[in-house]
Amino acid sequence: MNGRHHRHKSSATSKPQQYHRAKSNFRYVKKSELSSSSNSLADEERVSPEDVDVNGNSSNSNNTAGDVASSSTTKEGGDDHDIDLIIDNRLDKLLSDIQQPELSIEEITINDQLQQDELLVVESIYGENVFSLDTWKGLRCFQIHINIDTLDEIGITAKMNSVSEVETISSNSDDFLYSFKVQYLPPIVLTCLLPKSTARAGSDLPLDSRVVSGIGCIDADIPFLQSYNNERRHQNFLKELHECCICYSEYPGTEFVQLPCKHFFCRKCVQTFTQIHVKEGNISNLQCLDAKCKDMIPPSLLKRFLGDEDYKRWESVMLEKTLASMSDVVYCSRCETPCIEDEDQHAQCPKCFFSFCTLCRERRHVGIECMTLDMKLQLLQDRQNSSQLKGNQRRLELEKINEMLSEREIRRDSKFCPSCDMAISRTEGCNKMKCGNCEQYFCYRCNQALDASDPYGHFRDGSCELFPREMIDNWQVQARVNPLQEIQQVHAELFHLGGSACPSCRQFNVKIGNNNHMLCWACQSHYCYLCNGVVRRGTKHYGPKGCKQHSEG
Image 1 (tube, rainbow, N blue to C red):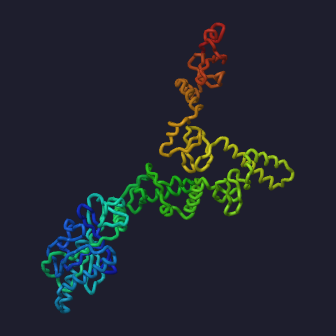
Image 2 (image 1 turned 30 degrees about the horizontal axis):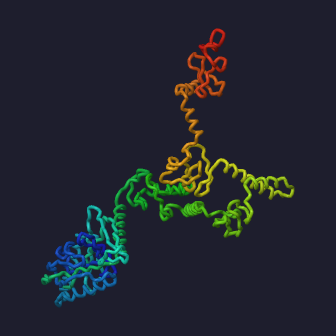
Image 3 (image 1 turned 135 degrees about the vertical axis):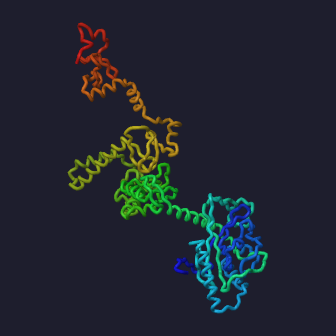
């Protein structure tokens, strides 16, 4: 073939796909192969979609090119093996209908060269869509893939029932419609078989028997359509240039990662993003990099961008957070192995077989109330005064005392997440809290779990206030501050202006001009700048016998 590159298949009866439109419905016809003579690429050979009825029958009565007989074509089975047999039988029949004269070696050589030239012409037209196959019973065989170009997406609706029947659909309640859209359809495949003799005009026949139609299993056909469409989309994506919305760099599609949510980012940004969050232990933030998308990055992609050490850390942290979010999982007080809590608040460690109470984390005590934290703390503190404790035992119990003191302080100033029991302390802000461990919203006042879609609904409908009362009171006090005095306060600190502290609240106030009458902006008290005394009535405090109301300095 003059050094041309060809892709070969193992047999002439490969498994191509074809799609016909029938009565306004998209109909999937599997393994449609057209076998013809050397002139089989003529337009009149192809079956028009409008000429195919719901049973796959062709009404085309055009003459065929070459010495190939024509006959009626109907739907013939849906099994792959059956269709392969039909194709083989059809090729045998078409070959037997061709009256091949006795040819000399020279004529065979000439015809072979003509066929080779014809194949070169076909390759120049269809390019990489021409595939040379292995010879079939000594005859040259090749395939042409005719791609179907669509401007917009095509909607496909399949009417199915519980047994996935396509032809006979009853009106029972088990029927349902499955709809989806595709932009790319698999190509129509023409399988061409060239006889040893040159092609000549054939006789007029009513029907064309070169179309083989078969309805396969619709449960397999629909995934195949979607898979082919996704594959073509991905191929086109790899060929184009795209801009990363994170670093705003432009790369070819091969340098991008497309997430299941269809958002795509460059490999460098995704790798940096995943490595940072895994090292910091923020695996709940391993979501799509798009600000409005909350889809998680699948583990298969994480394994590609994380090293072995980081991926093992991700698995470990993921397991730890998953166990922490389960309400019936506790940790052994001896070896910290996860255990399952029973309905009696007891658990047995599967590793060290220690049976303990999940409330106080001490040895199991049936019928006896748990010791409170203060009771256990008092007991250990009393044991520290005992002379029977040795050095190592005394040190261990002292560490336990410190842990209990820390736990008591945590319990005093924090609330526990209703989902994962993580201690959370509020420093400022509203009562709507979000757990940093499991991301559960809850009310800090009543400790009730809140709906993530509307966490503020609890404060609109319930009795809990969004902001604590003391915080609101502080804001109201600060709102009464004179803005001018606040500006002067800043100026005094910057330019070292004169002033004095309020005798009531000790708040520093700036002296305005030569006026010695001061007004504290914090507590609203009146006082004298000269004597620093509280002024009840200005007319009595200032005067000939009192302080001067105006003076320099």
